[in-house]
Length: 353
Image 1 (cartoon, one colour):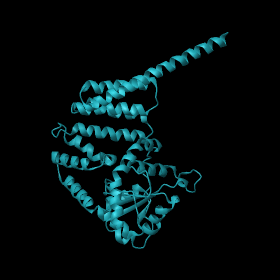
Image 2 (tube, rainbow, N blue to C red):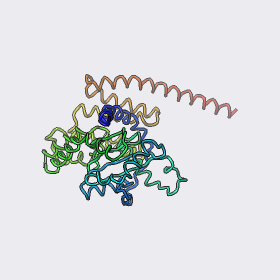
Image 3 (cartoon, rainbow, N blue to C red):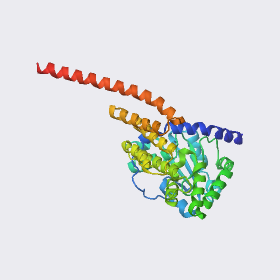
Image 4 (tube, rainbow, N blue to C red):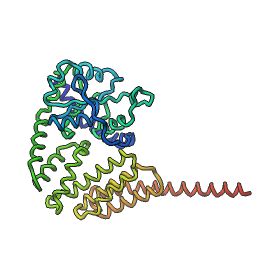
């Protein structure tokens, strides 16, 4: 029965990933600025940390992987079982401590209330960022990470009663875990363009929702391949743009996110397709900001620029569809503003009389 449940989990992962992607912008809007590094905390009596910075630091020192739990204890049910029957079980550390550092972050509403005892806004902000960057939109959940914080796999359905049940679920991903460690070792050993190729292999194997964690490796591609001999620099300039845009949202500076996608357009290494994607991303992000005549004009400008690069591409076809819709929106906005201006003028004249 355990294996059946876990297989069902894998079948549901794509659907959950899609939901996480759909909630991405909303989550970013909720996330507050990430205020530097937190004061490192020690694990509890069961070897479990409650702060991500602390467990990441511990993993770097020990070389162990990380089990990162997300709970909402006030919901009871599986959340309580994870805490009481698994993480606080006498044999948890014995079963997992040799291979993993463990962290649990709880998202119960009470702790985010300013009236809560021991309220810590900075820590709450950091914990919110962790949920955002790991795409967690339901609890309980556990993400299996490398010591660097890269995602190996995640489990969002946890029908477990004890640490042994959890171990069975984790073991279902043993090949993924071993393959990831092997690839990271190969990246560490490789140099120059060989390292670029290995980083790209990891990037492609990583779900798009989790590539933010690879930002330092992605930047290495740009630094290692200054002449674009691999043909991959444009791809990683866009990856960097995505990372920087996300950080703009995390700092509550959504207006600056558009510039992150316009910056790569200056590079000679971007292909026509990559330039189109940059303009499309700029249009999409602008559309997520406050709707105004000015923003509508910017969206139209970006969509037109994408179409002009290659009018026959599939993305150009999508841009034309969106362009037609945005032009109608702009016309309505201009008409609405004109009516407001007329009404304001009439009101002013009536007042003068």
